[in-house]
View 1 (spheres, rainbow, N blue to C red):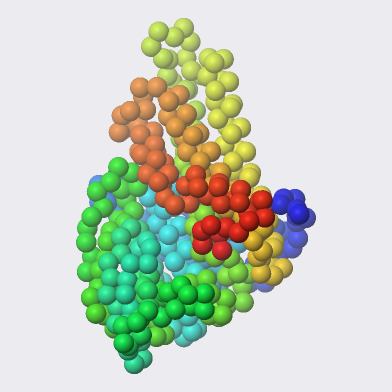
View 2 (spheres, rainbow, N blue to C red):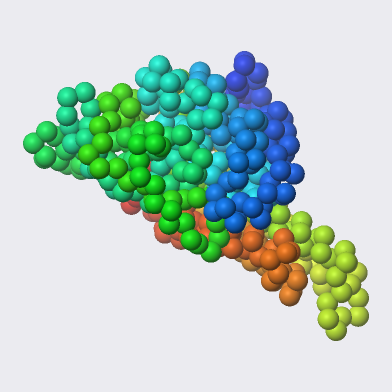
Length: 409
């Protein structure tokens, strides 16, 4: 069994351009880098607003950065995971809330591949289209002619303040109110797509970090949703798009996105630490940080750990990109990527923490570029992709056992 080390191969990108696995699409990376100054200027405003500010949303739409994993047939980039990671890292090095919203929105946009093409174009074709959905299956959908009557309340809908669409994951019931079951006895569920103006939004986002994600709660009651505007996520039988990206689950996409986010936060923190060292002399020290051998050692270790984490993420993403281009992913492929993403997330959390400590008392002031990154990092660390139990599941699979969570499917 080979868990690592596949040979590189060619893969086709949008517009017929062929890139080597791991070769970066410079255009989309440049588009992401170009909004960096906007994010730097808006960071405080994003936090104060509790959501992305209008100028940031406009800049992201102008550079088509909410369309990273949207099918090319609907005007999306349909990126491979390696390039996607590069984009999210670039954004997160400036502002983690923005990168978080982009990652959530990108995973949600993969839903377009599971809709009839004309429906997908109607919902996702507009240049300002963004889908946000809540965490977990919290809705109830009762079958009626032509669709479903949906009632539910969904929390953690990141990006809902600038979204045009909301998605409510809902358990299915027949017209008599009985659960609709899968062959294995589990209850079926579908994601119901709702225009934002049809939902009630509850502003509940009062948190320590990632303040700018606007991860509010939304609610609907007995709302009709047409059959064509519902989908079963990650079901190959419902996928209408031929691209290899859609052989990958949304859970894998979120893992890559949130790992890249933590790499970006750590990169921003280490770079800020280097900038600080150019001018700071710690109290009682005989030399500045810039001239301190102790600091040199610490900085080099932080840089090495960060580069290692980044390389691991890119290697694992490259492998899955290659395998998906060749055919359906195996459990081995999925475990490889999940193991990489949970490890990179947790490694970068520690790197960010250690860089914060290395900055000393300078790090505690809100005017400095450290404390917001630490708060964002620690808030992101609580998301399901970072759970230590993901190591346990990966270990089960390495021993030839079945995964104990659907996140690895």
